[in-house]
Image (cartoon, rainbow, N blue to C red; front, side, top):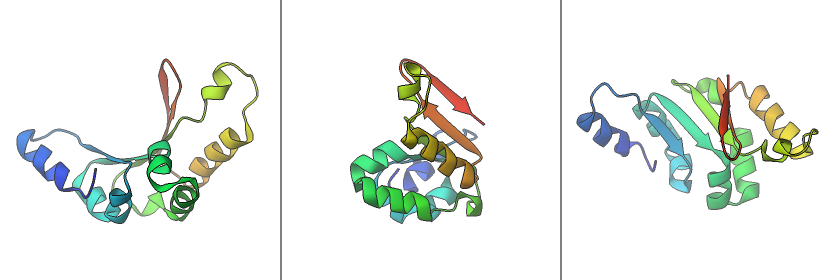
Length: 121
């Protein structure tokens, strides 16, 4: 999403549908409050944000974001368990990311693995 107006457009065309706003662009970080008010759930995509913002800015933005203040559930997503499909021990990055998501009290975390995905609540 860019600023939440996309949700208004979708709601007019599909009344009663549940909308999940995907935050993956720089504009969305600026307009996150408006996006949060316009959707039923916010999905923050760490990898896409990292590609858009750069890893340092993305990490700072994620660290400063408090999902407990959102008026809708917030899902943090990341491709952090890919390594564990072939190795029994997690990497430091996988442990840190999982810990960060847990400490941030996100109501849901989504860890993508190829060729399938698993959602953890």
